[in-house]
Image (cartoon, rainbow, N blue to C red; front, side):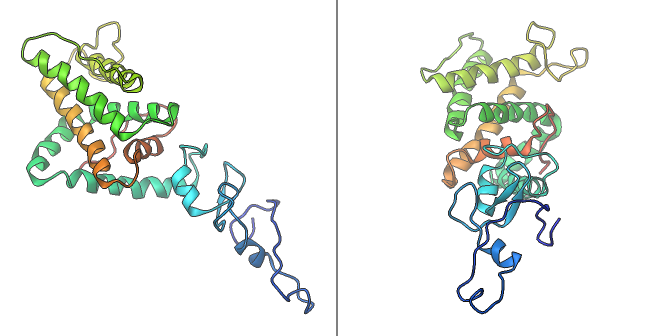
Length: 249
């Protein structure tokens, strides 16, 4: 391991500063390191060693492509610090939903944080399997599903669908997840609710779906990225199945 944190043996391209060898002074490793380009974008200066690529990459590629395009190991220090920072941003986003929603969201997360975690874990898996999935797709899929559940809440059974194939596929997965919690003993009973203790009530299911939709919609309003919310979820959850909640605001 060198002083820069790069493992010994990592290939390094030497860049000679003008006049250095001419004066009989050999370029140092630090000089070479400071002028290396990122192996991913080949544009910006490489400053971080990526264990997945076994090479140096720039901070921007590290932040934007970690997990989504780079198969980051769970022990990567940049992955860990990134998750900590993004989880704080997530908490701020929850609080930004407005004071009128603060009490309701606090109660919802206190009583149904596992349900929300399951929905967000599902979205994380879907994002990793479909790189074209966007926050707008999430908003649309949940909105269509909510129409079905709100109609059911009025006593009418009618399943609303969507013509967009990507949105419809996501809607079906979300519905399957919710139904496994509402009817844990059923054929799709893979839920996290103890069937001998309680079932997820329809009103609670609607509240949880509206909460997740509001987070995706808030990211769309920021216009920072069309997939900022689902990207965050994909980066936050470990690759092995683990439905831990993200934050308690």
